[in-house]
Each structure stands twice: as C-alpha cells, then as structure tokens.
Amino acid sequence: MTQTNAAVIPFETPEPKSPYRRRKYHGSDKPSFSVEQLKLFLDTAKKSGNREFAMFLTAFVHGLRASEICNLRVADVDFTANKIDIRRSKNGNPSHQAMQRVNGYSESHALELYLKDRATRLGADSPFLFVSQKPKADGSRQLGTAQVYRLFVGICEAAGISEQYHHPHVMRHTAGFLLRDAGIGIEDIAQILGHKSISSTMIYTRNTMDQVGGQVSKAFKKMF
Image (cartoon, rainbow, N blue to C red; front, side, top):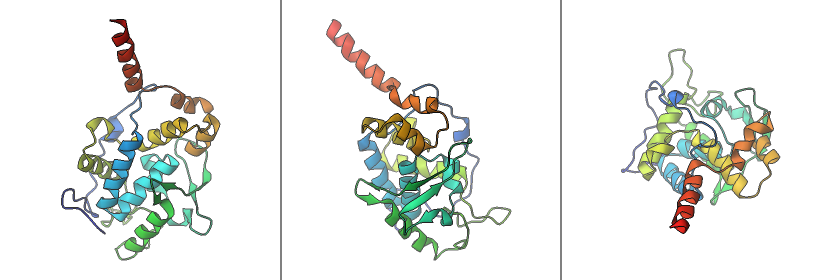
C-alpha cells in the first residue's frame, strides 16, 4: 500500500470512540464538496492507500453513510456485471447499482487493487469488504464507523480541506448536490441514495446556506 510522507494514514489503527455521532446537520445546511474539493480529496485519498481510496470513491458514487461503508461485503461486488449491491441503513431502499468512473478514476479498478492488497494481509478471509488489520474483541475485522471517520478526517487534513467538511457524511451530501447540479432528476437521485420518501431528497433542490449567503452578499453590493 502506497503512502505519502506528508500524511501517513496507517492501515492498522485502534478504533477510538467516534466523535462524528454527536454532530448534527439541519435543513438544507449540509456541508458538501465542490467539484474542485472532491477532486482534491480523491487525489489525496489515492496517495493515502488503496483501501482509503476505494472506500471513499465508492462512498461518493453511491452516496454511502459510514455504517453502509462498513456493512459492504465482498460478495456485494460483481466485477463481471460491473455492479455493486447497496444495502441501506435507516430503512432505505436497497439497490443494485452500476460502478462508475469519477475524474478518470474507475471504481471497479480501485476495488480490484484494494482487494489484491487486502489478500496479502491478515483478515483477508473476512466477508466484509473494508476491514481493519487489527481484530476486535469478538475476532471480527469489520471496519468500524469510528475508523471511517478518522480516515476521512485524516485525508481532509492532508488535503488542507477546512474543518467544516470533516465528516464522512459529506460524501453522501456531495453526491446528492453534484448530481442535482448535473441535471439528474430528483426521483433518480432518490433511487441512488436509497430514499424511501422523495421528501428526503428534496433538500438537494435547495441552496446551502453558503450559496444563499453568497447571493445575499451580491444583492447587498448592488444596493449600495
């Protein structure tokens, strides 16, 4: 697994108590990356390691929550059909989604590289897709949400991305907002994100507070 000297994010780490569970976002004020920030994040994740890159590329493409990342299984990935089974938390709709290319990066190729790397490590026989090298008390090597959070924050810090984005749920919101900006219909976005109710997807039709603030600033400049 390749790593940079500037930001070493080790494969094996203890699982700390997750701080992101305490963070709440309200209304349409949900932090999301711009296209430029997403490119920067993915480029930095690629330098951090095959696991981290495959994990967060997959998280963006399918709008995954941290728990959904952890619950992915090796058997969910169908390289022949170039698709992946997504099971949603919070009673969301499961789906069989196509793997994609983002910024020149192939999701399926990223997962293949990661699995090849994983095969050389302990825990390679785990049914879960993303694993920790250090087993938990019960012997499981399933990656935990706290580790997903820590890895995400580490990549953000290495990329110089500000603290307001230091939450793995940003990838899900980024998928929703960027798909909307690309002209994808709200019903299609709902299917991608696994929403049972279209009302949950409607947040992506609204501007964020940052966007609103920018528009207000422009309006005030025209007034005076």
